[in-house]
Structure formats: C-alpha cells, structure tokens
Image (cartoon, rainbow, N blue to C red; front, side):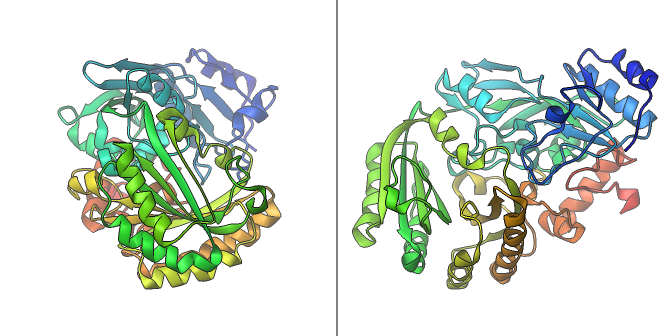
Length: 467
C-alpha cells in the first residue's frame, strides 16, 4: 500500500477546507466502505470536499503525486469505482446541498446528494426529477450514466432533464457546461459517465408528480412464469404514459403485505405504478387479475417519496453483489424460455432479474442528442443482479448472472448495455454500447478535456490519441 509522509498529507490539508482522512485515522475504515460489500479497497487518502475549489485542489494534488483518482458520490456503484487502492478518493458526500425554484421548476443539486435528498426537497412543492428506484443511490453516478426509473416513460431519463452542470475537469478548471456553454462537454457528460471531470453541481428540470401515486405488486409462482410474461408483454404494449411496469423474476419479499407462507417463494412479479387517475391503474390491474389470478397482490395509493424508498431495504448496504445487463426489443418467446429456465438455478433468494420498460418520453429523444449508451427505440432494459449476504453464495450467483446473460444475449439488441449496469468494464462491450459514431465523438471530447486519462476508473473512454 502506498504510504504518504505526514508532510505530504499535511500539504494537502492546507489546500482544502474539507477533511483529509488517512489510514491511521479512526474514521478511515468507515470512510472507505462502499455499498457493495464485495469491494474492499484501501486508498492512500480520502478528501471530503466542501466546494468545487476543494475538488480542483485534490485533482491537482493527485496528478502531481501520481495518485489514481476515484470519485465518490453515493458509493452505490456495483463496480466499486468510488474507491481505489493506494490512490486518492474525492468524496463529495458533504456537497449535498439542494436549492429548488418551484416557480421555474428547476433544482440545483450538489454532486454528493442522494436521490432521497432530492425527492424530499422537490416533493415539498409537488415536483420531482426523473431518477432511479433506490433512495440511497447517489445523484451523480446515476445521472452521468443516464438515469432510469419510474418516471422514464413519462418524462425521460435523468440526463434528458439536465440543464447544466458545474464540473471540475482534469486540469483543475471549474467549468459551467450547458447547451450554450461548452456544449460538446455538456453532450458528453449526459451519458458518458465520469470520464470528463468531477461534477459538483447539477441543474435539473422538474416535473409535477404526486404527492400521491398508485402502486401495485402482483406475484405468481414459477409454474405460471411463461403465461405471466406473455400476458405482461401484450398488456405493456398498450400502456398509457402515466403508467409504468417493472417485470421481475425474484423471490417474494418478507414484507407485511406478503402472506407468511409465501415469504421468499420464487416466482414472477409485476410492479405497477400510476401517476395519473387511479382508474387507469385499476383497469390495467383488472386485466391481469381476471385472466391470471395472482398468488397474492398489493395495491395502494402511496406518497411518491415512499415509492422511491420502497426498494431501499432490498438494496441495503452490506450485501455482496454482481450484475450484468442488456437491452431486448421485446419479451419474446426466446427471452421467456431463457428466463424461466434460468430463474430456478440461482442460489441466493435475493438475486433477481428486472425488465424496465423504455418507451414514451424515453424514445422521443434523438439517438445523438445525448451521449447515452443505449438506443432510443422502444425496448426493455434488462438487469440480471446477483445479491448475496455472504461471499460464498455470491460465487455461485456470479456464475448464474453470467449464464443468464449468455442465454439472453442471442435475443438482445446487440452486445451493448446500459453503462450504469456495467460491472465488468470490457472495452468491446463499451464500444458496442455507444456505437462507433458516438464512441469516436466521446473519445475526441475526452482528448480535449482529459488528454492524460486522469479519470479512468469508470466505463473508460480513452482519449482519441490513445484509441
């Protein structure tokens, strides 16, 4: 492990207003911990930045001393890119300020804020940023890769609602980027991940949402899997925009609404959210209920903030995790056969497969309007997630994740994936995710703003000169 002298650490402390944490300090082990327990890395130091100036100073210090840089927002990334052995972690967690302008329907959000922070602040005014499904996810990591969740069909990806950013680039400059200012950098940031700098502030467009929405979960056992998936496919094709559905292969949670005899039972679920009239939500449910009575169901109005927290416990810190993903055009017979064959093979009851429906507002954005690593045609984003309370169980489900992905790949839209679902940063898959034209443009922008590839602990776009 790299050991920095006391004078070297002290010199950094004189440059920043935030705390500098090293291995000898009692808070070090907690400060280096990330969401995925499978990641255990020991940085040389952690800088808890309080401003963009702190970030700039930390970048300058790291490059001067030859230290790798990791950037920590919510530390929720599956790959563990938020922490690095022997390097310097730029920790943005203290930069979590949120300012909402309800009249303009705008919000300025610090780079260290969590989705739950944003939901709480914006819902005070009946507004929301389209974002992810787990409230302890970091805004920055989610946004830079795209950002999809319950509101994607209604209002697009998170990046589709991004108006400007404050970003610290590799040479330490603090830049405001938007459609008018540094437009190429702004284009790249919207989907290009953390390749182009450290974003210290986001400005988002807000949408009227809630405060009460409709939620339902219907669950069927494994024997009904093929019928459920076929019926879901047919009904989802007719969805109005104010509804969204996630199709899941999972074990029933030990939740209060689940009869105890079904706790952890394997099967298939549809999770249905409604953002409009309750009647529209009820009609969709009745079509499912009448034709395929579920093993159990739950349907209730719910505050939007609670909807955003509903999956928090299932995605709690401390589990051992691994995932892979792809896009499929439809839940075809081949997809159904692959999924129903693979689901009984998983070892951990926490592991699951999710299908996010992507259409509506998602598909109204042009393919090249942002750097998003996925096509904008109507499709499903598929997430195959191994989750285990122990490392031994994860070994079995890591193989299950890979086998399931292999089975689904012949039915996928190419070999690409959603960038936020890339745990293994394979360059061929990365190029396939962006496509040749988009990747080349990203590489050119990378060469302008980060020619030495300082920010490479990510789904890395190499500068054009190194391509």
